[in-house]
Length: 415
Ligand SMILES: [Zn+2]
Image (cartoon, rainbow, N blue to C red; front, side, top):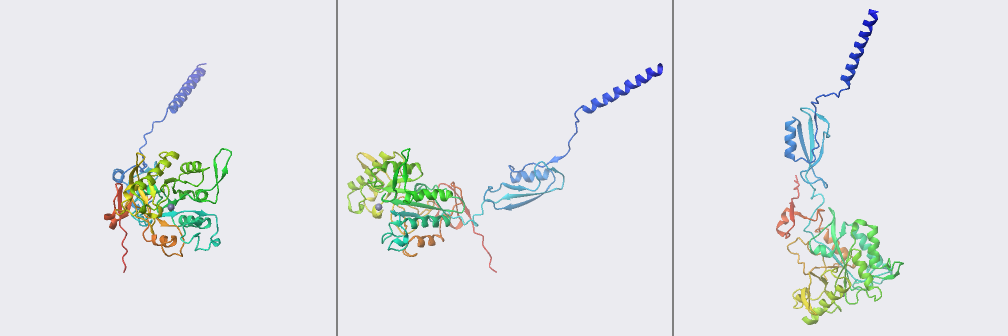
């Protein structure tokens, strides 16, 4: 009997010990982790990274590389990934950004910008005209639809991206890194927009083969082309009593601009100062009726007249008509070449040059001639609207309130 009792007591003791051991094991293990883990260094400055490496006795190796996306002095990569265990004498290699390689992209924000002057676009093939290339008249003021499409392809394929004229004037050049700005303008409102009718919602249906239709086609064809243009109108607007109001509003709603080409397209050299104010002031008032505060205060000078030294010129910039004052930011002349960057001290925003968009076998300041010439000195963007990037030796030519970054072309030794 005693044996049995002893046996039971031993059994109970063993069971108790097992139970206690089990309970001890169930308690969470408090283990001290002496490991050091790698940090994510992406928000650290170079000085902080150096200090961190020193404290953890890492062998730090810094590599500098150009990078279009990572800002200068920021981390591009680290050889030891975050949360990896590190120990003394580990090799840590970090790559730090030198910023954009301006030289590689040939960035030049003091380069020239082409402002193209178009008029009518006729739905024709080049072979159907008796004039050079896509010219429909002797001077090439009217172009064929075939030529206009070729022009647009040419601009796009040669690295040009459109900006609004008003943005050019105000120095807001929003163009991707390595690309060049281009401005399109149309004068007179004649044969630029053709309306085929109205759809079920009373919206205008635009002929795909008019200037506006082709511009809309290119918006879809090249989404990064940023298609836009400024149309300069007389009192006749788009020569469509039925649809003028709808067209002009369509344009504003679709990212185009409307400017002033005077009331009746006179030669301003030959009229009085009072008539000049009527021509400019009354036209602003017509635009105000159709698109209040949505037009641009820019005048495309009819026939390119007057010159800025003419006495009437100041009445284009500033005057009064019907007791209402007007102010013009910019006038556009007829010219033969691209104008300066808005950041160039020689830029005169009140009197801007335009290139006549026409063909003349690469001579006499036609499109081909001008774009060949631009290859030597075109504006090439740094991709940042808030900075002006120029070559070091051009820093005396710059005039801007934006921050200026200069870089120096690496000199290559010739042995
Ligand atoms: Zn005109």
